[in-house]
Length: 90
View 1: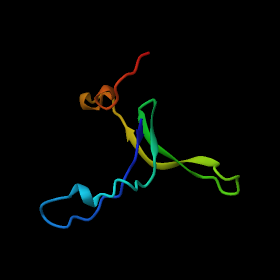
View 2: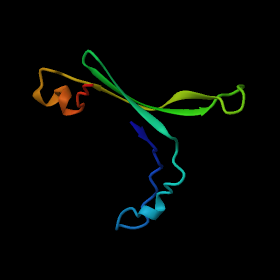
View 3: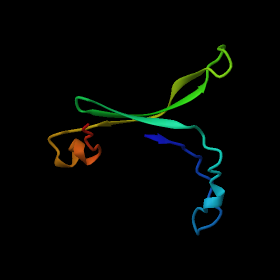
């Protein structure tokens, strides 16, 4: 899954955010989302690319842009994994 996170602009009035204030043409990064499950943990990594220091022009490296970790208690019905993640089958 690809995405382009943007900085949330300050609200100018109580009417809420306006689309023209979001500067969508300049996202913070172009990212890919990874969802990993290990035992009772779900880890969501948002990965981005940046220029690789000391490398030839155009070389990039992938780095962790943001991360969210969720620990799940499977004995709690509201913690079932299918509540957050849809299975993918080829």
